[in-house]
Length: 121
Image 1: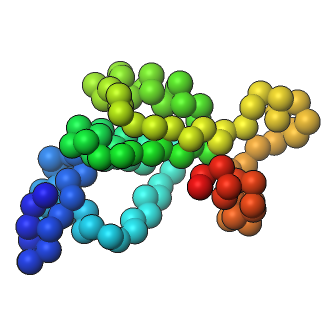
Image 2: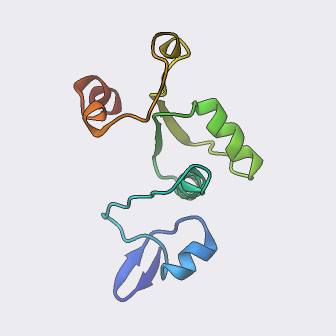
């Protein structure tokens, strides 16, 4: 952890990001990563999880869209092993698409429903 203005920071796992954020993330804060498809949201998160797992921290990636295997394969392509990162794969099965013609990411109401919340817990 780096220190900036009397606050300890948690490394993002990306040197350039840590530099422009004066050391990384502030502990015990929530961060929203938003952007369009392909802008790097998942890669940013995977670097953070890799950094934490390399330090012996418990790390969990919850996916609602992409399958775990695909995320792990993409991570390997950029040199991330994710060996100690746990996954909770809540992405829809292929059967889901036989019954519904379109698929959008879950609305907040759907994510807050009891079955998904119980799986995350």
